[in-house]
Image 1 (cartoon, rainbow, N blue to C red):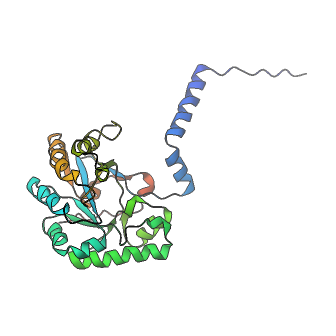
Image 2: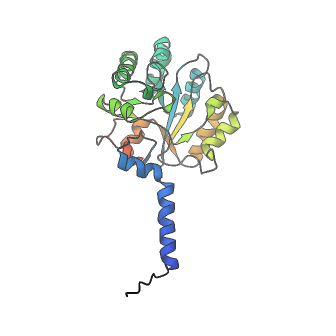
Image 3: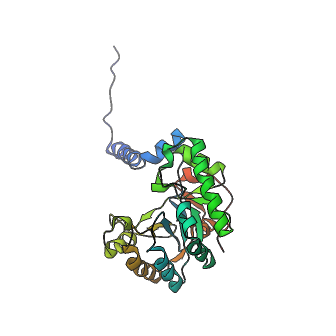
Length: 263
């Protein structure tokens, strides 16, 4: 009769397995997406510079966009404005001012609805309608899109990619639309929502210039000044992408060619 002896696992092996388990749990979303073929929008990029992208979403309102443009002009800062086409169609002069002052225009869709709830043909229609409106007003190509409410799935990203778009999310959320007060908006950007360190090189900051975010007007000058003091350079998304070594997460890297920054 053969005697089988089971060796007691060493502390080293237990520790290695523990580390492996921790890594798999911590990054389970990325692991799942790699093996399931799940596509991702661009949340941030890897850069060798101090570059950070500044973005604003606008879908409605009359009071907030112009003061924000005034602040950006005073500070000599350029940003990307993701515009819903119905809002843009009602505010030609403001949109044209954005372009004239060096800001980049991206699409925020046509109707402010979750694109992932639509079929591929409906998604394509929403994107192309918005594109036609925005390009007619600006005289420029629009090839960046932020899905309304940040809602996406493979269908949304693959349809946008087919139409020549890159889907842009964000890595720093000001949460200004919740109206938490200007000091909270400043803290969310500079220190992070859960004190994880705040904005850093390669990040994409999300603000809103709709009337749902009145705190942004007071918070923005403080944020811009603080980031500049730290040595960061704020710019539109297209310019950030042109400096990127890669996009994050890896599943967002659908295109090889760089985006030409807005002039």
